[in-house]
Length: 195
Image (cartoon, rainbow, N blue to C red):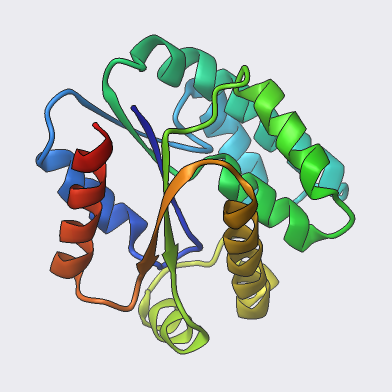
């Protein structure tokens, strides 16, 4: 089963992935971009935010997605694959970047994923207040995408939510402002329902 944990930075995805992975057998934890050797290079380029063309950025994400699917997802479909981000983020960021058509983005992602969309998407949603708190509290250097600003990140989140409602994929919406244990229980219950 292929499960995406989606959401903007600081929403708690990584914490929940670590907790959930401990409670299931036969789990593969991965991420996009960065889950393959090629993905590590792609991630470094993308986080620098050095590409002038948003089309080039989109194509780099798609190349990473295709390689990630071929190397990690396809050979392990009999296991529980938990990915920190995937194609929903790709669509959300592309739509926030401007002049892209939703249906066209879906087709491009289906091509990259060999027509195999995830079995479940868990979307973590936060609010501006929590986002400000968490980005301000973290002692780290912001990457190029985070430097686009908090309004940009909230726009990405909105595009992810709207896109999820249009797709025919099982999903779970998570209020990322809730307590960690409560969120974990909701996710575990949902995964067990469809395993």
